[in-house]
Length: 119
Image (cartoon, rainbow, N blue to C red; front, top):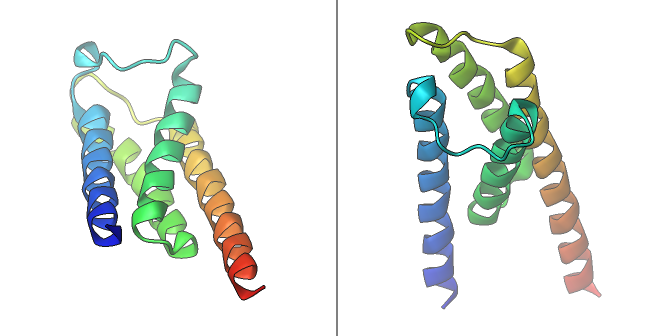
């Protein structure tokens, strides 16, 4: 059962990352997934959720965190290549902040879980 669950987390991780890439690079008028909380919250929540799922698949949050933070910056900078979007440093920082928060929480949970298994 654990193998099947792990494969499901890997699949979900890849799917979420693909969704982030597509959502970042499609034309702005095609976007339908908005929370209504503002673009700042959308960036934070999207990267927080993606990082959380990726850390479940690959429980190395101190490696995953910086990689996805760089991905947030890369995706934002790639928006310069799209005709109707402009890269925004603030948006990259909100995405990186969501990733950073999720990675730190994952590291904390992993540490607590390992301590509990020792006792």
